[in-house]
Length: 444
Image 1: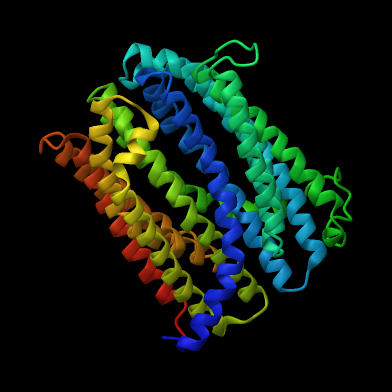
Image 2: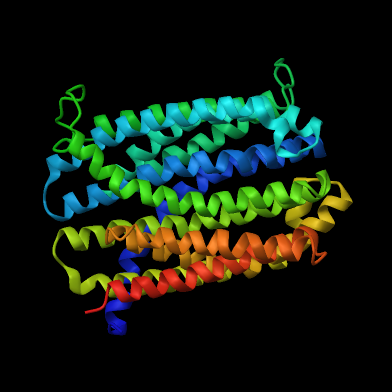
């Protein structure tokens, strides 16, 4: 175990980087949360359709996020080694990867939207979700461009401007929601489709603002003296994909487990699915905090590796895990104590509120395990240990979480609560083994 003095010093350094990263990640999730809260005022069917649509969107979104996380890893390693021009080249290739991946994912989501009737949902939910799903799918393109630019800036220890830009885009999204969902200022009331259009516009504006910031900021002058349209180098793209693809695999395994859990809950009807959406929206929002901490850990571990400072690795990882546990204990307490107020903020239906309160309590119980697994994953990414953790996640989510959730929810008779019990068990399994892997990889 590293000395306490060193752990505290690394905790302060990680926290300074992590706070704006947490806020930036939270701002992206707030778009979906605000959409759900504002759509919930329209009715239970639109809220259930938002839950269904978001459960299908989470997988392609996380594929893109996983691929682009490699930008922060490679930029941090180049910066740690003093190769500033190389960091700019990584950004150039990362932007190309973000546009290519975004278009492919958006096209796939658009095709999927024409087969929603095959997912076992009620016809009115499937019909309501179609347009929303298409609009949100195409919003992945500007979202991934923003992510590449954001991670470049963060890996060079300039996280605050991207955070401010993304928080501003949340405000833009909220204002557009008010106009387009409810039909204010003379616009037609588009309901759930209005929420999707608002998100698409806000994400496009955020991507443009981030591009202008990176291109014009003097602090990046030595990184961005590039021939932007020069042919791409295959080896640089492969380096990004070698880190990004396994990372995407880990995120997809978790996301697909939660998506399939939403489909299972949908078998129980619109009310349990709406309650599931409320609990999932809240737990997904709190997840953004350890995800931001995880990204900071990736950057700091990557810089230590690039700079040859391997003696600091365990202190960085231990301090990050401690911070993650503290953050998620706080989040769990807030969800448990405020569950009635939280559920009531989404919808006025008493049946939905009652079920959501139970599921929010279940979500509160697995917060620490969720924090442990995502921070450990971030540390392993910085070490370029990305293949074996994929196998751990496969077992945790598809070998533990979903089978237990099905058994407890349906044969066991616990319904949606049983499904969430299985998810909690899978997260506990993943958090324990990934933390052990991090400890082993930083020995000596």
